[in-house]
Image 1 (cartoon, rainbow, N blue to C red):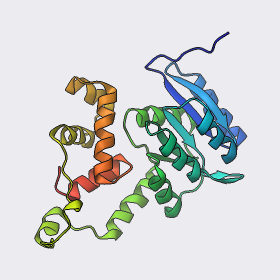
Image 2: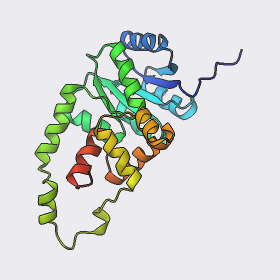
Image 3: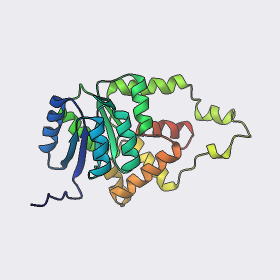
Length: 234
């Protein structure tokens, strides 16, 4: 019998996770929902990379970093390359700055510690798919501290001390619609809510978000808001 085809509203999920108990708990929570479908599960990096190359593309990829045969960061980078429309969320026991930054740089948009209950992870998957960037409070604090330590100047100070010979390639310009979408994001609107307000499709909103992220050279909502404010764009 042919496999059931997911409706457009169904969130297709793939998991790379080696902990059998955690894997089973999250898979069970996903299967109990009406708006999600688990496509496949891999318990090693090698199996995850094979599935990324050969399996059906997912809307959300849930990745552990500490895999028995390598780092989940390699799976994140592969997903960013092979499935550009897929949102990646890390679920791991590693909460140190190095793993967080490496994951974000590789393409992750969410980062949860494994103290999160499976039911909460399901909710965060919905948030990620809607354009959010779910992140554990401890991790969020680390990211914010990182920005503070970087010593980024306020927009006014940056303008006052800018070198007149600064390369024009460093100047970022957002279109009116990109800026409008970003402003809604700063107010906490989800992609679906923005789509309804602007009377465009969910896909169109995500396209504006991806373009904005690319222009600002960021990987998450928190980074985009910070960078846009630092540049005086919002």
